[in-house]
Length: 402
Image (cartoon, rainbow, N blue to C red; front, side, top):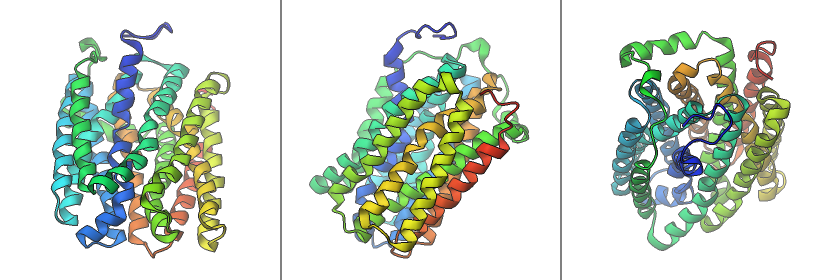
């Protein structure tokens, strides 16, 4: 299964397609129900701010779950933890469909996220098992491009399910997706050979996270991607109410507008894959951070001044989302470059930072909800600025592989 010599691994694109599906679980689990959030609030008697906490609750489970699955996979291999995680995901999704209160819904979202995090974090580790260097960045960009189909179609499909069968049917759809993915996993070979596994017990391995956090370069990459994720999840949590409630967009049309940002993400990931060997992953990551900061400031200006209506908000948000292609894959590869023997743990740590910042971003938007897009715009701007600082001033240029 190795690709150290440049040849494709056994089972080639089928394996990569399954890895893309696993990486897409974070998007599938949230984007599918975004158009239903206002309807869910009415059905459960909850305010917009409380419903937005279903995103934050998911991120809490997702972030903490990765810290467990990473070292477990380094010790026991990748496939078994993913399979167990998918079972958790299916049970959590069913719980969401059956929820009668917002509190129960948030609790089930935590459970669902804990399971989904296994597939996301370990699919990245599997890429690192198979590829290295610029090739790893290229393959992650390719996988993220394929995975972007999920958030591209998610709101569109979710809006139609909502229209035809109600919001609970969206979560039953996730149950089916989880079961089908579990079946597909049986066709994927193990990528971490027994002789490459880390024999440390889980408790001891967990203590290693503190040691890893002393590495400045790792912190720089994790901070760049993490703070950007804070802005992205502010965007995910805030746009349903900004577009549907504030700008009166029909729920079934939300997916089409949201898809503009996903198209931008797919395009930038493709461009990153083509340019990374020429310019280096660090330069492209810094370019993406600068792009995110400029567009994030534009989003804040538009939301504060209420300029340009719906179109005035959509355009800078699309540019902001498009910077994903230059930031995410490159920051992950940079973080894992110095620790190939701990790919699962590093992937988990980076993912936990990313989604932990996502908790902050979406949580602040929910806590400060005032019926306008302003909280979302301000959070996006602040997180983008700090991401820029991490990319340019925390990642040491003289050590980083350009």
